Length: 296
Image: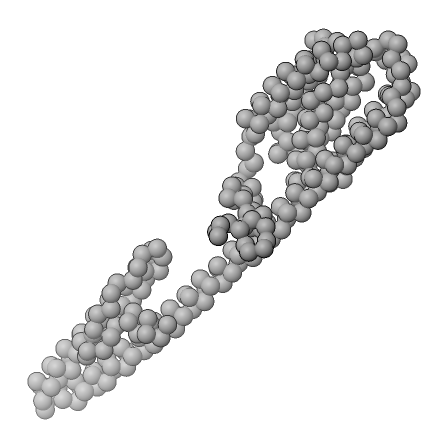
């Protein structure tokens, strides 16, 4: 079975976001400039509008330098759609409205305002996107049913309301898709945050567990040192050999405790490394790591 798909459910990326989503949800990183997509869309609009002009020759005004400037402006504005989505959606809507109001042919220029609206809604500026699209549609209705008499091309007639319904449907479809993606984006961000919080919580619990076990190790070693120090002081004059043994034990236990503390600190500094293998201490008991693994 495909690992990316849950049994009877959608693909894994649909529930948790695509692999490239990390750079979208990093709030401290500035948005990247969408150079490639902007260049592609601008070239597509300029070339596609030429084909649209040939297809609508005699029905709409021919493309002139002013029309190409408007097409270029509508495409280049998309370069700022991630940094200034509100300004871009209103700017593209205004450029497209001016383009259509001048009687130039319908075509891929509408794709620029659609992409700007999509970016604005995904960025959370829903009202601005809806207002820009509503203004564009209202302006189109105004031009197509009233102002067409004074605007080029000459001899143009009003547009049927059936075409206006098609345009309205197109606007609603774009905003609906953008709203769906925005909802999924918010869910992805929330799930990523929850998983990050769970990972931090597990790390904190692991640190607390290590601190507790390290406390137990140090308490045991200090207790042994304290007992042996008392024995050494008591037998220093009467039994020097036994006192020497007690001092040797103190030295060994203190060195062993210091080594285990260093081992734990080194492991915490390098979380990707595996812990050192367990070594028996001077009394034959397993070291801290072996005791920890035995408890786990």
